[in-house]
Amino acid sequence: MKNIKYLSKLVASLSESETIAMTRKSNELRAKGEDVISMSLGEPDFPTPDYIKEAAKKAIDDNYSHYAPVPGYLELREAIVEKFRKDNGLEFSPVNIMVSNGAKHSISNILLALLNPGDEVVLPAPYWVSYREMVKIAGGVNRIIHTSIKDDFKISAQQLDETISPKTKVLILNTPSNPSGSVYSEDELRGLAEIIRKHPGLFVISDEVYEHIIYEGRHFSLAQIPEIKHQVIVVNSVSKSYAMTGWRVGYMAGPEWLVSACSDLQGQVTSGANSVAQMAALAAITGPQDDTLEMRDIFMQRRDLIVKSFEQIPGVKVLKPGGAFYLFPDVSDLYGKVYHGRKINNSEELSWYLLEKALVATVPGTAFGTPECIRLSYATSEENIKEAMRRITEALM
Image 1 (cartoon, rainbow, N blue to C red):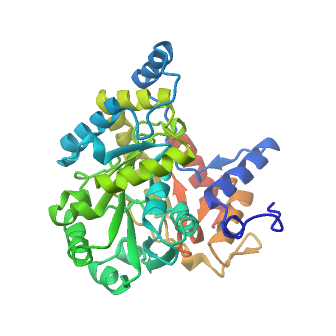
Image 2 (cartoon, rainbow, N blue to C red):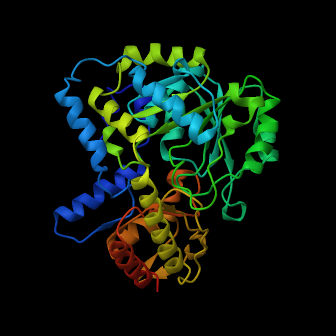
C-alpha cells in the first residue's frame, strides 16, 4: 500500500499492473490450497531451449562475469544486425542497435530520450498495460485511439490522421498485439505510413516482440517501408520467441543519434544488460529456430481450442487471433446479467467473479483501455485450457 505522504507525485500517480495484481491474488488463493488456473500472465510455459541454457553455462565458465558494454556486446549486436537482414530485409549496423534489460526497458529508454513534458503519444487501444504508465513517467500525454472487435482491434489511417496534433511526438504500435492478438497486414501498415510520412517530427516505436508467433503469413515491419524507416524504432526481445522471459534481454534498432542518446541514459541508470544473459541471447538468435517454430505451432493448437470453447458461450464475441498467445473476447453483452446470484456490471467485476467462482485468473479489459473485453493468455497446457473453459462455461451459465 502506497504511503502517499512521502512519495513523489509521479510515483503516487502510477497504477499497478492489472496482470501483476491478478497474479498476486491468484498466488494468495493458491497459498490457501485453491486450485487456481492462471490465464493472466503472458509468458510461454515452455522451458528455455537446452542449447540456450548450455550457452549460458559456457558463458559462466568463460568468465562473463564483468560489466558488459552499455549498448551490449558487439558480437550480440552484430548478430541482431544479421537477424534484421535475414528475417526482415532491414539494413542496420551495430551503431543502430542497443541491448537493454528486456523490451520494456528499451521502450522506456526511447520515451525518456524523446519526450519533453506535454509531448503527446498516440496509443491505439487496446494497448499493453505498461505503455500508458511509461508515457506518464517520461512526462508525456497519452492520446488514445479506441478500436473495437469490429475493427479487428486495429486503427485506420484516417483515425491516426485525425489524432495527430502539433504536440504529437510518438506513436506506439504493437503487432502482433498484446492483448488482442491482432496482426497488421502490410497494406494496413503502408496506409499508416502514408500518414506518418507527412509528419517528419513523429517517431514510431514498433513493438515487435511477438514477431515469431504469427499463425498465417510472415511478419511485416513498418521499418521495411523506406520512406519512413528513419522515423521507426523497432523494439524486440528474446523473451517470447525463445521462452526467455526471466533472462531480461531486449533490444532496439533505430537512428544512430537516438541509440546513442538511449545508451547515455541507460549508462546512468542500469548500465549494460546481464552479461551471461546476453550470451544466452546470442545463442538464441544465431542458433537453430526449430524450438521457436514448434512453440508457435503448439500455441496455434491452443488458440483453436480456446476460440472454439468461447464460441459456445452465449453473449460472448470472439475474434480469432492472428498472432501472440492471447484471447481478447468482447464480453460486454454479459454486463448487467446475474450469474449464481452475482450481478456483473463491468470487466473488472467479471474477472474477479471468474477468479472467485471458477478459480480462473483473467485480466479485465480496462487495463488495456478496452473495458468491453477481458484478456486470457493461452500460454498454458491444453489440459489447463480445457479445465479453465469448463469452469468458465459453468460459471456463465
